[in-house]
Image 1 (spheres, helix red, strand yellow):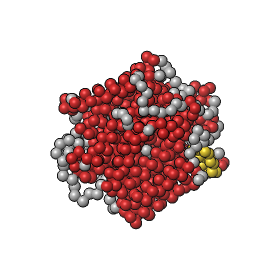
Image 2 (image 1 turned 90 degrees about the vertical axis):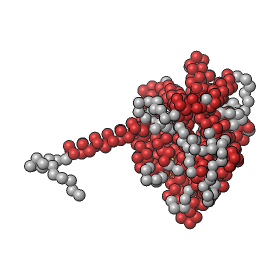
Image 3 (image 1 turned 90 degrees about the horizontal axis):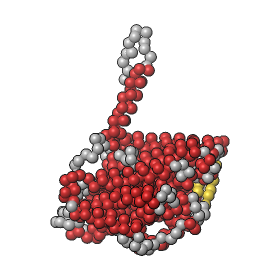
Image 4 (image 1 turned 180 degrees about the horizontal axis):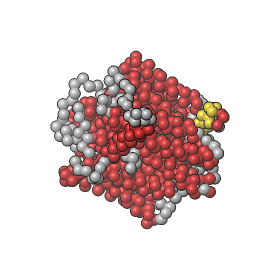
Length: 567
C-alpha cells in the first residue's frame, strides 16, 4: 500500500471516529482501535528492513515543497508505536470516557495520531514543521476540553510548545537556505554540517531546544505535569507515543547531522542528565499517582535525551529499546491510574489500599509495569537500562567522563526504582477499598494487561526485536544496520549490571525508609519558584506589555484626550 494512501486512510479515520462516536458513543473506541490496528498491519507490510521506502506527491512545486514521505527503520519504529499504542488507548477509552463528549474526544485523538503519523513519515522540512505544529494544536485542544479549569494549563502548555515550534521553524529556514533544499534526507546528508561549524552549531541548538520543549526537558519541563488536568487516555497517549515522543523522534532524526557540532552532545547529555535526576526527585515527592507518573516521564525522557547525546551506534540502540519500553510501561501506568480513579474514586496514595485483595489481576499488571519502569529483570526496561549504562561507560570522550555520566544516570535510576516501588507498596497491601458501583472496567483492564504483559514478555524474548530496532538505531546513528549488534537479556557480570544492581538496592532502601523520606521531601519546595508559576508570570507579563503598547500606540485626538473604547 502506498505511503500516501496510508496517510489518507489515517485522515479518513478521523472522520470515521467522529461518525462512530456519534453513533456508538464511548463504545466507538473498539472500531477506532480496529482501524488503527489495520493501519499498523498495512505499515508492517511495507517494512523497509535496512533500506527505505520513499514516495513524493507534488504540493507547492514553485518553491520545491512536496509531500515527500519516507519509511525507514526509524520512522517504521515510531509509526508502529503511534498506531499500536493508539489502538490500546482507544480500547481503554471505550470504558473510560463518557458518551456525552465522545465525538470531540475521539475526533481529536485520531487527529493526534494522524498528525504523529505525518510527522514521522515526512521527508520534507516544511511538511515536518506543519505536522509538528498539528501535534501541538491537538494536544492543546485535548487538554483544553478536559474540564472548566483546564484553560490556564492548556494555554501554558501551548505557550511553551509553540515557542519550541518557532525554534524548529528557525531550524527549517536555516537548513533549507544553507543546503538549498527542503528535502529532509538530502538536507541532513549535506556537506555543510561537517564543513560549516557556525551553521551546524546554530541548527543543532535550534533543533535541540525545539525537541526539549516538546519532550519537557529542563527548563521547559513544567508543562507536562501541568497538563495532568487531561483525562487518563489523553495522558497515556501523550506520554507514551505522541506529543513527548515527537521530540525524541526529532533528536534521533537529526542526530547524525547535528552531532558534527560539539554543542550537540554537550546540550543533550547535560540537560538530559539534569532533567533525569530532577524529574525523578520530583516524582518521589508526589502523593498523587498521576503527578508521580508525569514527573517520571520527565525523568525518563531526560535519560533518553542523554543517551541520544552520546551518539554512538550502541547508544542509539539503547535509545531505540528504551523508546519501546517506555511506551509500554508508561501507557500501562497512566491507564492504571485512570482505572483506580474510576473504580475507587481517588488516585492519592495516602488513600488507596487493598488493590491486591480487591483486584489481584490488576495488581499483578501494575507490578509488571512498575518493574519495567524500575529496570527489574526480565522486563524490557531492564534491557534498555543496561544498554544505556553500557553506552555511557563507553562514551567517546573518555572513560573518566563516561563513568561520571553513567554514575549520574545511575543516581537517577536509584530514584526511579524508589518511585516505581512507591506506586505499588502504597496501593497493593492493606484493607480492600469499596469500589464505585456500576463502573465497568473490563476494557480498561484488558488494555493495561496487554501493555504490561508485552513489556515483560518482550524482555524475555528481546532478540525478536532485532529486525525492528537495529534499523532504527542504524538510521539515528548514521551507520549501516550491520554495525548494530543483536539484543539479549543477559550480558554476563559486568559494570552495567553492577550499576543496575546498585540502583535497585538503593531504590529499595529508600522504599524501606519511605516514612523518613516522605517527611524530608513531601510537601516541601526544593526551589524558590516552580516552572508553572514562572510560565504563568511570563504569560501575564506579555499580556500586560501588549496592552500598554496598544494603548500607547493609539492616535491622540486634537483635544489631547484619547477617549474611551467602543463597546
